[in-house]
Image 1: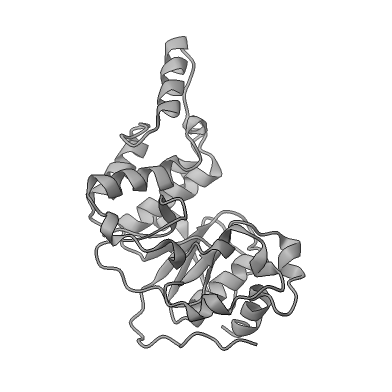
Image 2: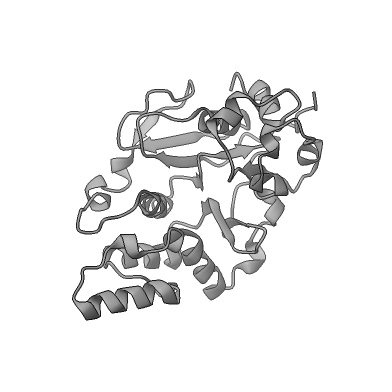
Length: 266
């Protein structure tokens, strides 16, 4: 069994915040939350309804205090779930409540306290919004939320959604948020404002959260992972590929089996 990375050297770690839609949390997400606590991070978990199976010691906070549910559930807007999460995330950051983390982020090291920006990049070079922090008064957050409230696409919109909206209006058809690409309010918007404000030098390296293992099922198989624990550039893994049965059947020698043992009491 590989040794664990060194424990945090300071108690002054930033708060991590996440948001969930639904009554129960999958087992993999529960493991990820335990990994955050094990690193020493305070954790804020938000939802609009009670979540019955949170890990011990994590309280379900009212998401309504951050952003009104009615604005996200407006039938005229027809907002897909992924966009609801994106908008809620922006509102949370604007209130300064912590670093946003997707609930399927498995930490192997603590996340450093940010200064001007916290964004990683995926292997193709675009910002990784699974872990994100902007200063709460940054004009990028204001601009993104303002576009949402105005039902506007925002200046970062790609050609396809602009053209789709133009054609629908030309035909007299209604437009809503289902026309938006799934990553319009996340990766696309952040990439635009990172470039606008010349923040590229502040982006973390792709290995911070997107080592090769993040794109495959190798964390759930008997596969070497010592290099992830030894590499100081690796903070965690945002696992794109995951299935409940993979988690349940992860064999000894897999990263997930190691993590279940490592974070069992967190």
